[in-house]
Image (cartoon, rainbow, N blue to C red; front, side, top):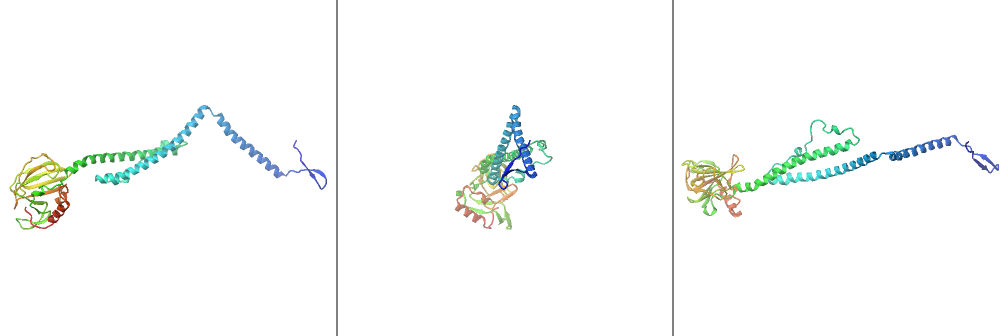
Length: 323
């Protein structure tokens, strides 16, 4: 039986019964039900934790631990990607520039994976998005590392060849400076000494006494030797590798044979006037690929700046060649 509550009425000097409103009654009822449900909910959670078997608790701890490891793994992947990006930038801007190799475009470095969804097997799990993201980033990082590794292998090979390249490029005058009377004719249009017509001169003529030593201007292999009384006369051609070839003509005689290895500064012959020549001199050419280049740009190892400036000035004069 519900308790009845009273209050003292001062006007009538008597106790009166407190009337309970229906709205208050409903409010109390709803509040009570809500409180019971809330207590039951939290009680159920605590009770369910309490009711977990040892195996379930171990699995939950393992799952929480795996989530933590995945978060740490994603951070390490991001850090590794940042380091790789810096290495790629140095590779393109420094290493490959120094060794005259073409930069690797971003499209090749960071190309994606085409075709079907390769991560479909990871879908449908509680933590699929987390696992898929980590797997995808690892795949991208792995592919970029392969590209970078191949690039560094190429750089190592270029570095090994660099020393050989520097020794092979023609870099000295074919006739010692002390033995030169003058640089008789340079590269460009000159007056032909016999036909008296303006003709392109593909090399440089060094005027020197007959019998003056002629030297190989870079390491290489003798590609051709020829004796002739016409044209360029007695001649030697050296293949320096890396696309470079040098040609020496109008020799009195040569001292090398075909396929012989020579080094920069080795004696290969003597200045003469063989073939179509009007005076003792050496005709010298530098070829790269199939192009004949101006030899004046290849004397950077045996001339002072003043001597080089003087040679440039003489080479630019449009005079008469000696062949």
